[in-house]
Length: 266
Image 1 (tube, helix red, strand yellow):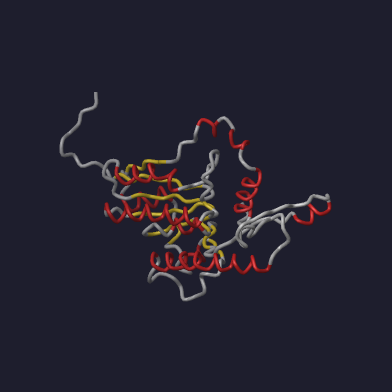
Image 2 (cartoon, rainbow, N blue to C red):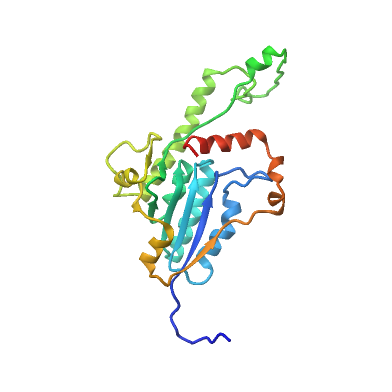
């Protein structure tokens, strides 16, 4: 029989929230990280019990800048409201949108081989117009509005479209830069950190992008004592996902996700 002793001080509680995968992709069968999908988990991490801190374990090559911003903003909003510190730990990679999430933490710890950075914006696609021509396939497009067929992969590359894409990327890149500068104020090295370069482990520490080398369990025990209660939290996979419904998802979307990981050798 378990006896409860009143007024006995409990060990500190630290939920460990795992954010792993490509960011975005809110399709029916997608396993990507989205604000809507993570909201209940994030809320629970900050409100269940009386946490001494919340730990984020991040392993993401990036993805949607909007979902990155929404998830990071939700974490910061709750952290500031509840006055709970947030510690971030990077596994293989926190690049692009993954790094956007990482800087939601008050401090960031990485493995000596973690890949960090890629503070930039990328647009990717394919061009099929020559393939269609070789097979005698005619593309018929009717639009109301001159920009309605903007970026159509079945039409030849249009220099005007490239200019428009650059104009779309610039404000997103600036928002990313401002987010990093605000969250890492006073810690960034005086170097060009915003040209989408990446750094590994200790070099990322030297550039001020992260705070040190460290792994989640030993670092949290160092910060909160050996009796700290660490509670892992993660997204539950749906029944359809467990039964292999990912096979029904778009082949192109799967290739794009694989390409994001492949950029970092993963």
